[in-house]
Length: 167
Image: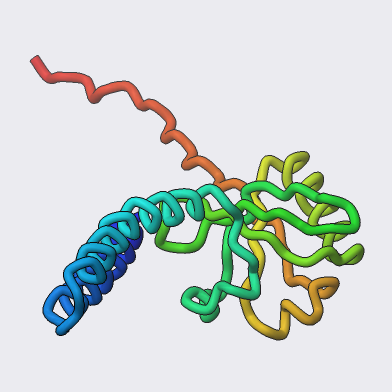
């Protein structure tokens, strides 16, 4: 969500720059007014589109910025048989999860479903290695998915009675 502000700022600066060019160009006043109105209407449209994109899952193939991430925690999977695999992933170093959509692959869907069921039984979490690499996009059936068991809580030290005081 942090990037939304900067994307909107860049789009707004572009719109204002184009409007300034149109205003100072030797054109009739009517054309300059239309250019200013277009810039003013452009800003809410862009903001609405950016916020609308936040609710849509991102295609895994479009994730070029995080492509070098070695692993991601799989929080949830939703299978739309014959259409797509929807993933809810948490990347390392990030608190908020992200929604992704991958092309349908029977082997990958079966593997993810099986691993998630086992993780629930073991009370563990599922970790996917190289979720965005080009190799894994082509071979989604050979996903490297593993179950991470929950951490073992530290054992309590036995309570020893306090030492006797000398009187």
